[in-house]
Image (cartoon, rainbow, N blue to C red; front, side, top):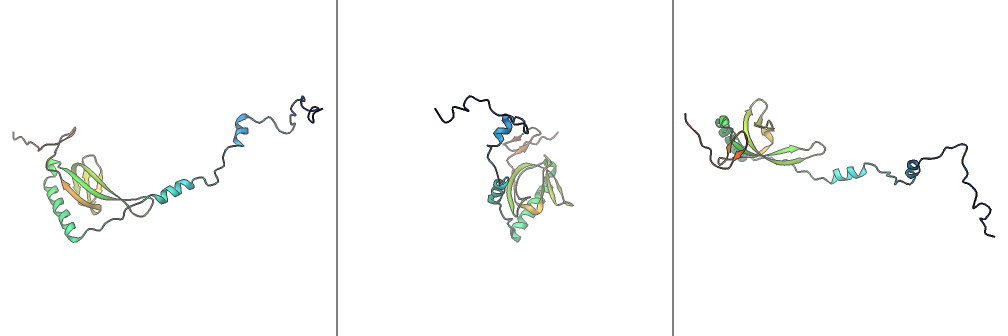
Length: 153
């Protein structure tokens, strides 16, 4: 006679206090426990690097001022320009440098912003470089890679 012969064929006991547990609830008992929920995101954010804003020297500021004066004189032509500017990080100290190419719409002297044709705004104080692309022509649908042709009527 085996040790379990007396109970091997009995039905499973059913509790009168607790109802039958669903399969999902039973499975949840064995799910991994994440004691440090969100900690991975914090570590990833801490590891993310940012750049420091470079302060321009007086000579560099004068060159930028000259380029802005040139752009003011060509504002009606919507010149294609490439601007490198600093964007402050919202979560930590520092930020990143962004290079944006597009057509100039307006220079707002009151807010000290350059406004592009796509309505993106760049604070003049954050600009580190401006390139005026003389070899490109703006068309309402695309940028053409050849000198602009001007027609006189």
